[in-house]
Amino acid sequence: MISINNGRFENDGEVFNIYSGAMHYFRIPAEYWEDRLLKLKLAGFNTVETYVCWNLHEPSEGVFDFSGGLNIKKYIKTAEKLGLHVIVRPGPYICAEWDMGGLPAWLLADKNMRLRCYDLKYLAHIDNYYKRLIAEIGDEQCTRGGSVIAMQVENEYGSFGNDKKYLEYIKNLMIDSGVDVLLFTSDGYSAWMLSGGTIDGVYKTLNFGSGAGTKFKALDKYNQHAPKMCMEFWCGWFDHWGGKHHTRGYKEVLKEMELFFEQDASFNLYMFHGGTNFGFTAGANQYLKYSPTVTSYDYSALLNEYGDYTPAYHAVRKSLCKKQNISLVDLPASPKLQSIGTVMLNETTSLLDNLDNIGTTHYSPMPEGMEYFGQCSGMIYYKTKLAGNTCTSALSIKDIHDRAYVYVDGKLIKTFDFNKAGLLKKILKRDVMVMASCDSEREISVLVDAMGHVNYGEHIYDTKGIGAMMINMQTLMDYEIVTLPLDNIDKLDYSIESSIFPKFFKGQFLTNSNADCFVNMKGWTKGSVYVNGFNLGRFWKIGPQESLYLPGVLLHTDKPNEIVVLELERCKSPSIEIVDKHTL
Picture (cartoon, one colour):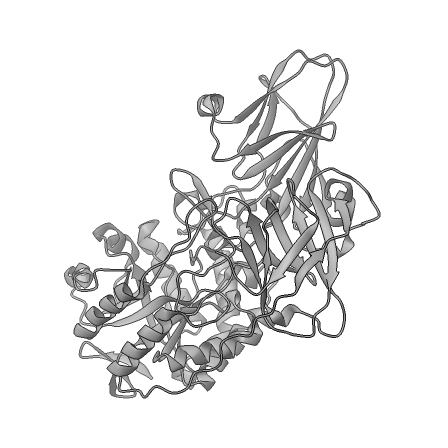
């Protein structure tokens, strides 16, 4: 059992340093967990750290899922089988560049609820989540013979708030729910972050990517007679759409590791293996502008997105094993890759012509965000009528947080993007376009593509959809609203022929291998890709990511495989390339 004595970690009475690597079970196909964990072990790490994604475990209020790729108990047991300790960071907020920082977006349905503070309605939801989670993994704690050595109280809370009553509540809830291993907080090294995010009697750790020789001094004022630990030692960074692909040289990482060794400090390398933001799970950041995160969570990690070794892996492994006098042994083989080639997508159908098949219709006098209807991701469609006898007017739309497509009588006339702010938008705080005069009734509709809830900072109250639509100063009312989670594309009707985008393109391909591969999206604009019903994630031509990772475990070798591309805007050719090379 891990404990703190005389300013050091001890493992069953023996002095012990935690050398951990971060890997999130929910970003890796369950079939690959053991392979990735074994590679962690063979690189000299003795511990694996993972966040817990509340939003996937409780996709709708009171409905929990710990099956398949969400079977965290199995993940922990797999680590234990390989001789690894486990650190669990259950949130409830995790950031992690994950949709809404792991908080369920259905929380936003209650417009009066306050998040990440001592709000009784919010706390009631956390109560249910924690009790269910601890019932699932409580017996895996080292105090009960398992491998979980520590659990975190909230996450980087000092970057958000200073509600100590809330933090104390979370700590006591964890204890009352059955947590009896070491509790800790993790925050940035700034004084204001530590002031807001730490609580008395709970072990304090820091998060940083460089400056290991001096950063721990930030804890001096807390008189913490405890081992030094960096809970997030950033070896890289994440990417957002329209930005550059981040990399970090391993020599910098090795230099920082040596500083940890010199101070006898422990660390958790974030990330050892990043994995993938499959489906619509990627979050977004919002500082000067809204910046959604790409599908890949490569993070310049030691294992790349598909689990292969990088030069950093070999360099860190050599250093870490040398430090602990661990002999280097043969490593498992690199993942097998395959190239399938060109696949024709010879069936098409329009999303707007399939609203009844894949959507749920609601009626409301005013627009509401998708979360109001219990939807957490995907798209949402609004339709209303504009009476005739209108002069040339300004049509304005409020609260577009993402990207919206505006149609008049079924024809696309405008695309609004949250980050494109013209003069009128800066003045009026809404997106504006000119509507021509008309003496007959017109149908106005808006399709919103939710690109990920903000996962960090004050903007986590990030509802998806629109807030209002106006002609000049007149508010338009009486809406038909269709929620489109896009998790049921098997219900699409491809007999409906239409040239209107967004469109679905479907094709089939054969393979006799379960090797991994990549779907190259060159020639396509924006959307998502499904293989055998599984959503691989988003693509967007603005990059930096150009291909989507297709795990081989998703493929059929005894029957045709189905691939579906949802293209929101346009494509050069109804074909796709499935190749053996990843392009980031």
